[in-house]
Image (cartoon, rainbow, N blue to C red; front, side):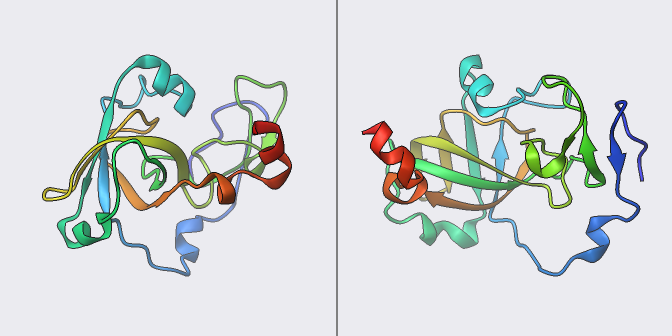
Length: 164
């Protein structure tokens, strides 16, 4: 296990990867201009950068793209394969004091799944290339799943009235 990198952080005394209870298959890869040291900390900052990104789907899953159209909002679920899995208490630079992993949106977590809502800006169903407005992950990040974002399902009821 790696040592904590900030004061106040705490690691687990085991590797969560050794407790795998389910198998995942990656359906594609997310292509971005980002690498360690220059990746935006969140999707808002990625959008502000103006840097587009795209997804390269595994050809075995091309039929699953049927019905997708540009302009649609999508939820991407992806595997942050270069994130730490052992941090359970973290000290993010933008808040005072440590926070539990489940109280923040850090990519460092026992299961390094991340999700973002993006806009599909282009699609080539023949090759499986999906152009998206932005994303905040490293180049070649594995894609676990994608789903259409639906306001009647994905916005909590108490917020639906406020959003009109």
